[in-house]
Length: 119
Image (cartoon, rainbow, N blue to C red; front, side, top):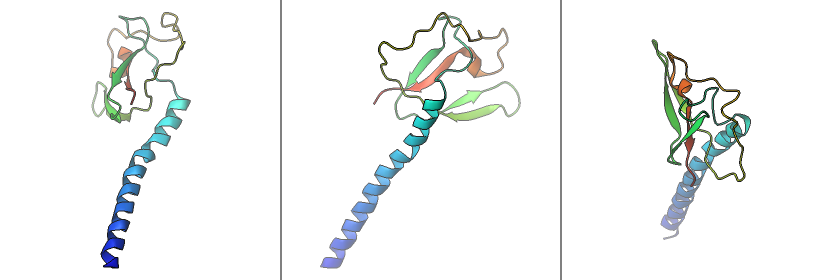
């Protein structure tokens, strides 16, 4: 009678630990990377004049970055998460950023960058 109870308790504890640790294992890396790098790249969106944040669901972990040429497709992590930062940074007309080239060679050059939505 005691043995099945012990096995069930151990199985529940391992399952709970596995569920808790699987979500926490990715977050510290994303937070550390988000603290070291900006959410945008070096290009701005020509329609807006600033880099544009494309908010995706908070469960999204990566995106595909397409480049023109053989083997120039990459899967990259989405590290930054959207939050209201009032008063927040103000961008002055996209200064310090490049516009989209006349013949872009990569999807990063369009000035639209993925950011996970709030929980």
